[in-house]
Image (cartoon, rainbow, N blue to C red; front, side):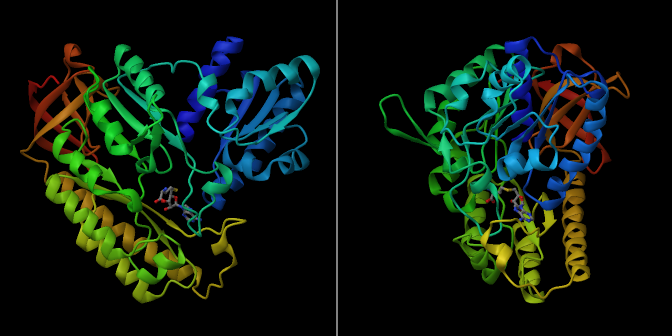
Length: 433
Ligand code: SAH
C-alpha cells in the first residue's frame, strides 16, 4: 500500500509541477518520506533519515521536506516539534493535497500539517496512474474498522472506506488499455470491500472480482490483504468460477491460539480459520496459502505458540511474514502486562521462520516437472539470454529470451530449480487469455 501511495505522490507532482523522480536526495528539490508505523522499528527510521535530510537543507535552504504516511498521521504536529525543518506533514488520506501544500510552501512560505481523514475524496484528485511494465496495483478500499487490539491502522488510516465500483472498473480498464496484464487489488482488508454501484446498491468483493474478470486484457488478478472474518462462501465460490484469480491467497491468522486470538480481538478462533482454508482447498486444490504471524503477543505461553505451530502444520503454508509483537501507542494491547522475555520470543520466531522456510523450499522443489502459467515481464539483467516472469505462486521463472513473449502469458514446463524462489524451464507454449 505504501509503495502504491508513493507512486501516486510521484504521479501527482509530475502532473502538477512537472517533477521527475530521483533516488539521489542531494539533487532533489523536494524530499518526501512516506512512512510506516505498523511496528516500532519502521517508525524509528523516520527521525534518523530526517537527520540526514537536515544536512541537505542546511546546504540548500530552498529544499522542501515533506513527511507523509502513517507516522505523520500518528505524530502530526510532533514531527515539526522534533524536526522544525520539516515543511509539510500529511497523512495517507491527504496525500492528494500535496501540490497545494507545495505551492503554499514555495509561494507563501507557509508550512502545513494536514493529517485529516476527508473520506475517500483523495481518489477524485489523483491523476491516471502512470503505467510501467505489465503489472499494476489498484487501491479498492482503505483503512480498517476491525480494531484488532495490537494494530494501529484504524487510527492512522482511518476506518474502512471503499472506492465506488465504477471508479475501480474504469481504472482497471484504463490500465488494461495501457498494456497491464496483472492487477493486484489493494486494501487493508480487501474482502471487506463494499463499494457502491452507480444505482447506490452495494457491490461485494466477490462481485467486484467477477466484473474485473470480464475486463479484456487482464489475465491475472491478485489481492492483498484479506481478513479471515469476511473470507465468506461467496469469495470461496469465486475460486471455482474465475480462473484469472491466482491460486495464491494471503490470509493472515496472526496466532493459532484461541486465547491469543481472543486477546487480539480477531473475532474468530483457529478452527474457524482452518475450516475456511479447507473449503478453499476444495474449491481450488492447487491453492498456495500465505499468512502473517505475530510472535510474543503479551503473555503468549508455550502452549499458545505450539497451537500456532499446529496450525502451520495443518494449513501447510507456502510462505509467511512473521514479526515479534511491537507495542503501538494508543492501541488496547499496549496496556497489557507481559511476562515473556525477549530471548524466548526470538527463539519462537526463529523456530517458526525455519519451519515456514522449509515449506517454501519443498513447494518450490515440487514445481520440478510441472507446467506453470507464467507472465513474462523482462529480460534478465544478469543473463539477457533469459527472460523473467512470475508463476501464480509468486516464484520467479526463467526461460529462454523471446521478446515477442514479454507482456504475455505462457505455459512453461519447469525442469530446473534455481533457488528457493526461482525456477527455470525451456519448453514454452503460448497460453493466451
Ligand atoms: N488487515 C490484515 C493485516 C494488516 S497489517 C489483518 O488484519 O490480518 C500487516 C501485518 O502487520 C499484520 O498482519 C501483522 O502481522 C503485522 N502487525 C500489525 N500490527 C503489529 C504489531 N503491533 N506488532 C507486530 N506486528 C504487527
